[in-house]
Length: 137
Image 1: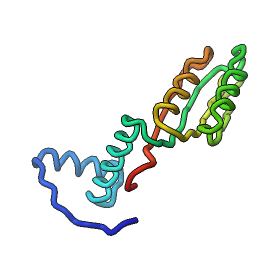
Image 2 (image 1 turned 180 degrees about the vertical axis):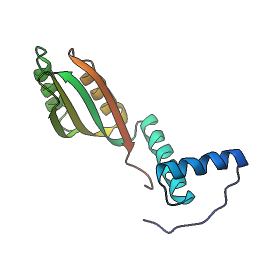
Image 3 (image 1 turned 180 degrees about the horizontal axis):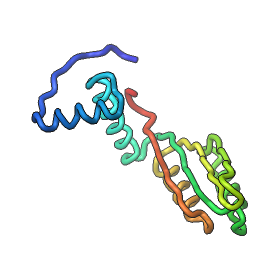
Image 4 (image 1 turned 120 degrees about the horizontal axis):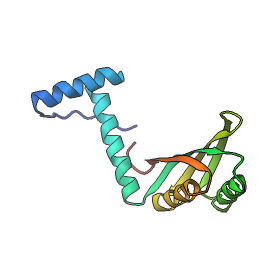
């Protein structure tokens, strides 16, 4: 971690009040820590938009009895082995499973992988959450 520098921020009173309420609700110890997180989130979003290196997770909810679903999901992960870091399989009940796949790579490539996983018939719900890995985080 680098040297901490101080700087001033000016904003409208109503905006500051709303920010302070958010800080309290989320449990931040101070404004500085909350602001650092907001900046990190903005930089991570930019990394995703610009196709830079990201890490993230693909979360899938599916019915495991769906024909060919597991074969296709496993095949996709093996073909993308340079981007798939790990996966976690959770049995929610007799019918449904949750798959969490950790991924890393250029944003456009891991986004494409996530889209292909979500498009497999039988996947009921899917989400992709990515964080930029390049930058002063």
